[in-house]
Amino acid sequence: MKGEAEMLEKFKQAKKDEIVRLKELEAKRAMPDAYDGERPSFAKGIGEGGEIRVIAEYKRASPSRGVINKELDARDVARIYSENGAAAISVLTEEKYFQGQLEFLDQMADSGLPLLRKDFIFHPLQIAATAATRASALLLIVRLTPEVDVLKNLIAMTYDAGLDPVVEIFNHDDLKIARQAGARIIQVNNRDLDTLRVDISNSHQLIGQKKDGELWISASGIEKKEQILALKDRGFDAFLIGTWLMSAPDPGRALAELL
Image (cartoon, rainbow, N blue to C red; front, top):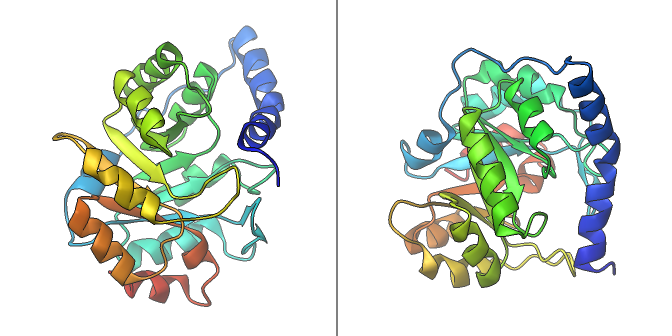
């Protein structure tokens, strides 16, 4: 089993060509302009509304599962999730390991739901590229950028671009860094990248540290409404669910049954 640091380094290396392309565009003053239309608020989407707020994910593949579902079209999935009560949509855009595309964000925007760009983001130009889409939020992973000053700058740049930064943690050390960097939306990943095992007790252990004014998301391994209700009772605001929905024969029905 690959070690966590090695896995994260592989993910980071997979973004190398993207960073090079973005730097070339910047040098030519050819970076795409930021989208100047309205973006639905991700923070409001997961902090207000229905009894259970699910961030439904468009996830075609993963390193742990391989291909999950390549047949479902991004636009169709966005419509299905919207019609079946999703509060927001998480969109995997990483190409090598998750078979995603940045273009999925604009393809899914007509759903009217806030879109979270889920990728391995650690460079300011990636934030600029995200701002050129119709996304409402992007994911920043503490273990990918564990230096407080670096993460703080990325969070500030994300807000400046009109997007909400969702900061992912795995343990108490990550949480400390996230708070020092100014995170307001905190996502607990129940997957240990060291073993690739999923343990929802990770969310139960960390939620006791939640502070007023923070929004907390539990991600990975959620498959049953009972799990959601237990986590909601502990204080979680929203629940990111991907593999369970994307591998279901009818993702819309699977989503509706969780609400």
